Length: 415
Ligand SMILES: Cc1ncc(COP(=O)(O)O)c(C=O)c1O
Ligand SMILES: Nc1ccccc1C(=O)C[C@H](N)C(=O)O
Image 1 (tube, rainbow, N blue to C red):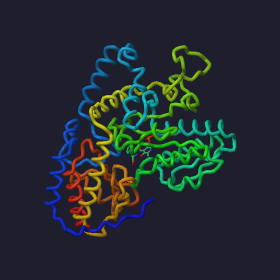
Image 2: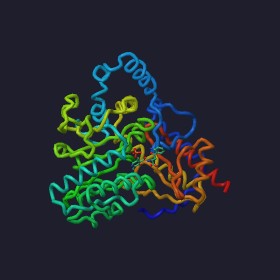
Image 3: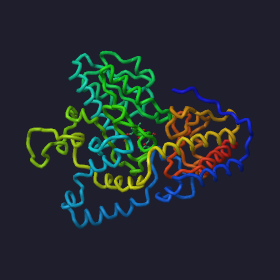
Image 4: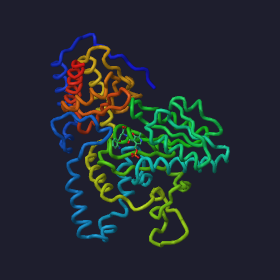
C-alpha cells in the first residue's frame, strides 16, 4: 500500500474563486462535458460512481419497452425475436473495446463473485494440466475487496489448494513452482491504487501460473488492454463505471487461445454446445458462451445494454485523460481549501499508479461523509477512516471537484 501523502498548501496560496474560475475554464474546454446530458442527475455532486454509476437517460424507456412489449406482448418469442438468448455475448462485445478485448471473448452474466469463482477454478485446472498436481497455491491480493478473498478460499478448498495473501507488488517474489493462479485487483477499491497489469501478468505467466484480474474499478475508467497484455482471465462488474444499474450482471473474459481449455466449475445448460438438445451428457459450447451458467437475467442485462449506448463516439483513452485531470484538480483543491494535516491522500500521486478515485484518510470519516452527503456531495465511507470520492468522467466536471473540496473544508471546520 502507498505511504499516505501529507497534503500541504501549495506555495501560491489560492483562494476559492481562482480555483472556481479555473474549474469553469477547464469545464469549458472539456470535450467530454456534453456527455453529462446523457445521464439523469441533479444539482448535487455525485462522486460515488465507483460504487453505483448514475442512470443513463436512455435506460428507462428501453427497460419499459423490454417489459411492456418484449415480455408483455411477444412473451416467449422474445428469446429469439428480441435477441434475448444471445444478449450475454452481444453485450460482452459492447464491453470488449472498453477493456481492449477482441469480439467473442467476453460473456456477461452472474455476479462478479460468481465469475471470480469460475475464473479461479478454471485457472487452477489449466495450471494443473500444464504443470501437474504440484501447482497447489493460489496467491490473492491481500487488500482485495473481501468477496474475492472469500471466494478464493472456497475455490482453494475445492481444488486442494491453499491461499496465500500477498500485496500485488510482492506477488512476483511470492511466485513459485507451486503457484497455480494469482488473483489481483487492477485498482484497489479502498486506496484507488492502480496496479501494473502488463508487468504483473507477464511475470505470473512466465512462472507457469495464470493471472486472474478483477477489473471492477477499472472497466470503463481506464484502458485495460486485456488482449494486448495477454491476460489469461478477467472479471469485472458493470454497475460502477459502466453504469449498468444496481445488480447489473458482471462479465468474464477468457483469452482467445484459452477458450477451448476453459473448464467451468459451473457448467450449466446455458454453456452447453446444444442447450436445447436436453442431452444428459455435457458438451461445452465453443467461445465465450462456455462461461455462461443458467438463464440470463434479461431485465438487468438489457438495462446494461442500453446503458452502454452512452459510450457512442467516446474513447476510453479520452475518459482516462479527463479522469487524471479531474483527480489532479480535486487533490489540488483539497490542498488549497482544507487546512494542512486534516486529511491525507491514500491515492498515489503518480498517474501510472492511480485509478479513477481519490481516497482521503480522515478522522471521524463516517460522520464527515454523512455531513458531506447532507450538503449534496455524495462520496462514500470505507472503514475504518477512509473518505472515497469516485470520478466518472462521463458526468463529473471540474466545478464538481472544486465544490466537493470546498464543502469538505466547510464540514471539517465543524469538528
Ligand atoms: C473489486 C471488487 N470485486 C467484487 C465486487 C463485488 O462483487 P459482486 O458483483 O459479486 O457483488 C466489488 C464491489 O462490489 C469490488 O469492488
Ligand atoms: N455492489 C454494491 C452494492 C451495494 C453497495 C455497495 C456496492 C459496491 O459495489 C461496493 C464497491 N464494490 C466498493 O468498492 O466498495
